[in-house]
Image (tube, rainbow, N blue to C red; front, side, top):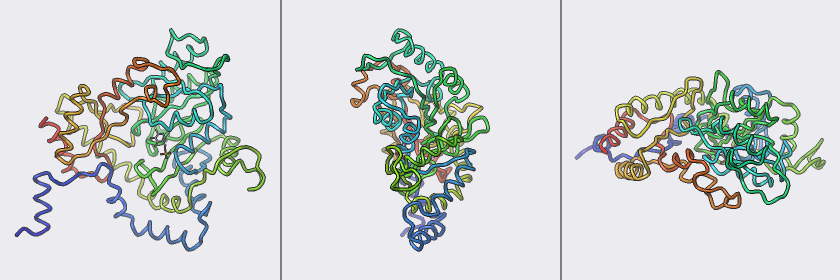
Length: 405
Ligand SMILES: *Cc1c(COP(=O)(O)O)cnc(C)c1O
């Protein structure tokens, strides 16, 4: 009879142990004591709303990111919403963003009655393409769709270009030198959607500090995640920070029952802040571990001609929220993902359909072919398991399974 230890080992050898896509349990095991202590402290003081842990987290993260102000909030979506509200975005305003992202990026624009103007991505980084951003701005300003595809508007008035929301997809920062220059020339603000890139760097600056406002998410699966929903806005601008703090609590003025503007209930729970404080202690080390895991994948997969491993630009360091590959075509992706699934290796597609082709955005009148790079990428991309605690043996097995196709 095999001991359970031997059984476990032999299961691993025959490859029947399921690999976790994101292993939150391994992380929790490391810092269980610290998390429990932090939670207990909140239960003891009882300040569940805006307790001392919230301010402490804001102070720590603003210094990590390198921005003067940090305003925590209830989710990454609320962070983006608060940022747009701080600029007074309203119906008739145009906000340029990528169609190859999670719906939240564009959804907040629409929630305020403004119009997302989509701009295609770079085929290597999957982030907004600065040269196409320049074209889209030019097209909008001259109302000329022969320059670049534009959304249909249902108003006789022309849209007013206000800002850009670049997304740091999969943890890799967009090209902010180029984006900020174009935005500056056109009087546009830049809100960095850093929901996937907290901990990444771009030319020695940290993600969340690359635009006028940086917005991140603490959703459990993000690089720095809590045990529920959470988010944060970062800015160097005193006025914007003051407005976002007000918006977070129903547009408060001097006190809670003094309402100077329309806001939201957008606070981060003290319990989530306490959990994040525990997790943040090992976060810098986890960022390093993510580099090793990603590098190992890239080395292991470099021998096979296809699928294509992610691009590593020299000026940016990804935090690897996802490790995504491009298959030859959609059918090759289906075959490969099924083969991996049969071998208990989970994969995921981020994102199967670009936003301009989502039913929710049908009223914008975009058509297939408007953003060919996003459409092609959506048909071929898939992501492998990725987290700081992914074992070398598991990665070797994943590479073997992929090579056997
Ligand atoms: C997760 C995510 C969001 C939204 O964050 P939530 O905390 O889930 O609201 C926004 N943008 C991008 C790119 C995301 O990945």
